[in-house]
Length: 486
Image: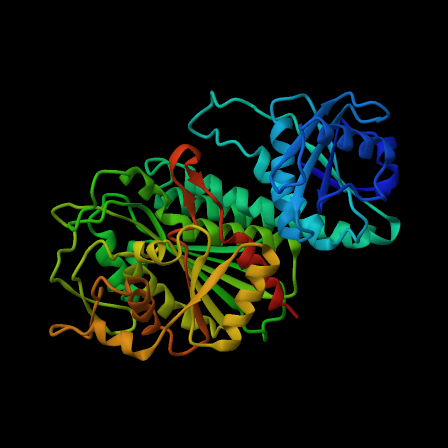
């Protein structure tokens, strides 16, 4: 898609050339600075009960009098925040999806600065609005002709708007990539497929990509990762991708993504209802690859390493059993109390492997626990770290990217729940505080660097009529990586 700025002011919008003009307004009245033709149309619609100044309300007019644009959409944002602007853009684009509008000009209908943040929000909202999954559904309708978007701004705002659009496009491309991978069914998106796509990403963007097979993983001693993979006929893959944007002396940021391409639960098998959604259990891996793509496009001065342990979790005659004890790459032993707590078993070996890069910071991302969904629902991702400074950096990235997360506790008392009579630790604790004890398990493998864990079980995909991957937390992760750049 094409994103660019378009020079004008709120008072001269009627002269803009576009297939459609989307005007986002906030407050409870027409701003005096708004173009008279548009202001008149809004006032007339309000007088006839066709429009209200309430967030989520839209007004659509075809061939509006006095406007050069063929279509006018007015979207009420409620507040003046960037978040409200992004939501209003999404609502405003909805009535244009089935129409022939290719070029959509977007403008603020109130006096005020058009910022870099508005530009990023437009790029991500517009890309989301036109996304359609087609990989296994070629009959999916092409709902939208929209392919060009411009953000109306002044000459003095143009540079910031261009910067925001560039960042937004890169993030949106990363989100789309993550959605595509996660939406693909388990018989398509296998560990081998994921590894091949990582190599393709590397080739397209000049990245270093290494894929370790079972033999290499066995030689390293990743007994925990191997234990999960042994129940499936699909070969495991351990993917390591690198973006080198700074000198060798600079310690890298490391992202670790859970890559379970299908999770049956193993011998501790899941209920059949909604098990199809367990194709989304590689959402962490998908988001890490999406972030890598965004970073590669933006080219910040930073070194980034992305690690993805990928396999299936299947029940079979060779699968791990409750009560089995395995030895992780760190040398710590783990009693398998529940084979459906497999994500932490593959992540712990990846977290130990991350030590070799002498990282500045490590963030792992995983659809790890249903307990996190119970705690936070589907709006906030769970964020766990004992490092207050790192927590604030991640929270700042979540605010800036409009990709929210919430800090969860990591008190030492929770660690008691992982005690085992037969190994250094069990792989699960009691039901209460399940997302916290899962994070405490991972923490045992991160003593040599700064670390945070993002549990995205509630945010990586949507269920119901709009079932599909969200691509989160690519925006948060990208902003975080950029914040660490020199």
